Length: 176
Image (cartoon, rainbow, N blue to C red; front, side, top):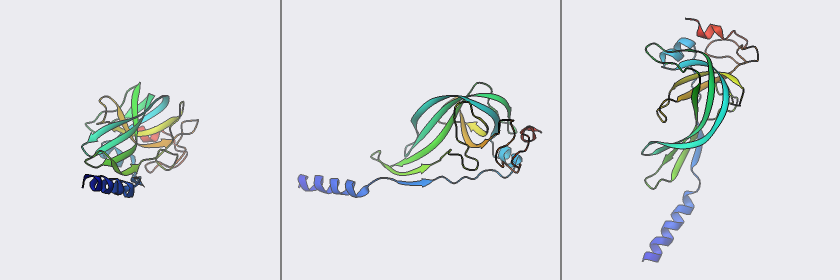
């Protein structure tokens, strides 16, 4: 009987296969006011150092994969009653969240790619981005990046962002 149970368990695991992977939706705010009302701070940052990838348990049934970065903050704007990062800042990209079953096996992965798509500027050392951030619940003192917009060499927006056109002066986003 034990051999049958072991064989059945192995067959079920083989059928389970790889976890389903889906892409996280990009629900970027329509305006700077919407971003601030959502509790996000705006930060003009230059990425100074990649600090590696790690995983953190954020709930009994969820493990998040984090790409950590160090950044210099040129300027920031806090939401009403909230905080904004100061330089230097620890930034975390939550690039995936795995939902796990009671055995710790991933059943579904939600990929959150910062790959250069709209509101998902890719991160690289020396790159400057406009980031929408909030304190990261997975790491005290760090800031979770929710959205990131590419900036041109002159500091203007390299893509449309929060109702601002490509090429708009970044100071517009930080004006009260």
